[in-house]
Image (tube, rainbow, N blue to C red):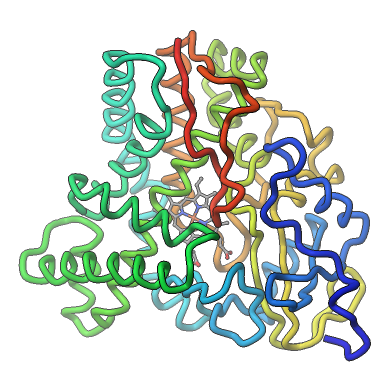
Amino acid sequence: MTSTLDPAEVPEFPMPRAQGCPFDPPPALRALQEEPLTRVRLWDGSTPWLVTRYADQRAVLGDRRVSADMTHPTYPRQAPGNATLSFIGMDDPEHSRLRRMIGSAFMVKRVEAMRPAVQQIVDDAVDALLAGPTPVDLVEAFALPVPSLVICDLLDVPYADHDFFQDNSKTMINRNSTPEERAAASGALAEYLGKLVAAKIQAPGDDLLSGLGERVKAGELTHREATEMAVLLLIAGHETTANMIALSTAALLRTPDQLALLRDSENPRVATTAVDEMLRYLNITHGGRRRVALEDIEVAGQVVRAGEGLILPNDIANRDSDVFPDPDRIDVTREARNHLAFGFGVHQCLGQPLARLELEIVYRTLYRRIPGLRLAIDFEDIRFKHDGFVYGVYELPVAW
Ligand code: HEM
């Protein structure tokens, strides 16, 4: 940070984001996009750089001279006491040592083998919707259970405990939680998953937690590392996809021509392109990627000094008209696989093949089996998660 910089003159990073269309980046953030690199002020008065353009964001995320270490003193934190979550907040070689241990479970081929099981989970959830009363909250009755059941299957975590792990995850990712509340929630999840890992060491199965248990037994991983990875997977595995399912349904109900195209098209690729288009158009990780420069680096023709923080909001990158023509329009047939919703570089989302599979099956199934799906409240009354680290809707009351 330069000594002449007066933080009071630096615009605040627009969070929470209760302005403008709830599917768009906030107007205040888009206004900052006029500059490729600009300063923003955070809750603690720090003034990291905001990288606004798609090409520059990719360059920074692919640069080994930037760190994702959330314990770094100048890491641009989203909130006070924001705890690290296993290897997502670490640098190589530690990051890749841990990531490699579970990488094979998320390879496209392995995930594709889960297709029949995921389809069954989605079919059962739609059966339950159709058998139940309306209006119904799609978040509670569908969007949250589907990915929770899938990640429970993969990890072999008992789904019966879903209230416990969903409630603690919610506390961890709520911006309004105090640091103490967040620490208590993460401690409760760690204790719970730590016990499950210990049980798997005694009696292994062919699930992912047992795989971690084997590594602990072999001395390749400490019990604590295994537990932290399990917490990361359980949270990342259900919260993100659940919010994408509900938020994209809200957006598609608002864009009936695109919903009709997705629902009625004979072309099987449309569900696949729709997944990437909705990931591009929406943004559930609306705090942006956060990094710290470890050396002086050049970004958009300017020098970012070692120790300075960087924020890379993928929502504005994914609306960069240099890369995505007419970026504010949903086009479910657009080829948008190069979006940054899963990040980029060494930390690019490990679970993306699974997230894609779940979203694709939901898009192929839900709207076809319930063609009359509609909002049961006024659009204006939907409560959006402006206060979350993960964006979405709190409830989505629907009928048909
Ligand atoms: C639509 C759903 C999802 C979205 C939008 C999403 C988004 C992201 C993003 C943006 C990152 C990069 C973070 C960074 O660079 O700082 C990430 C990392 C990660 N995600 Fe996802 N994710 C989703 C689903 C999942 C699922 C289903 C899983 C696991 C079952 C998962 C596991 C992970 C893990 C383990 C990392 C850390 C990777 C690393 O640091 O090497 N995610 N995700």
